Length: 206
Image (cartoon, rainbow, N blue to C red; front, side):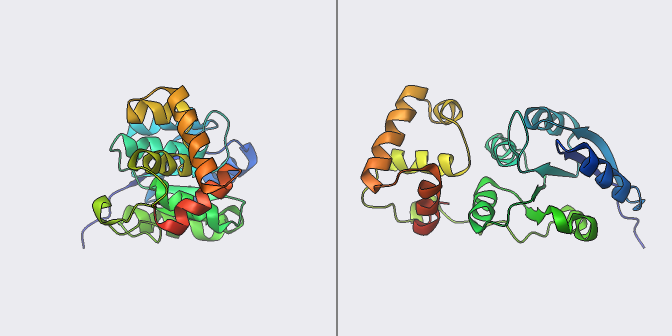
């Protein structure tokens, strides 16, 4: 029988007690090894790029950068490291955002001690419940009220990106991004980012 390759992990969470629990849990499986731990999202982003782990485990809420933003920036850079998002929030909207940003799994923290190792094995083997089907963007009908550029802005906002990152991605200034957001929200008659994300999910932009 062919021996399974070691699964290396980068774990990012700003709660030391929970992080210690993950370390203890992973230590029970000889096929897994944590190669780095981080308490900040921006630190996690650089560590994943530098170490190329088999799987990265990211807390949803962290200082510096949240787990979804880390995931989105990795995917923007064509980094396909499998990502498991950990959270205490039972919110379908966040699950949709995790999917749209390119996360492979979304796991509630209160299930982590029982399910995390199985989830890590699953994504390491290429399985995922969150990976969306591959579709041609040209086949997606654009909402009639928004321009193609405005749809691009909505997609990135729904992934949790800030104006500076959106501007860099689209080759426009942060001020122009802010103007787009203002016009979009007026067109759609929404008043918050959460409502904008719900719209994006509803019409298939993410």
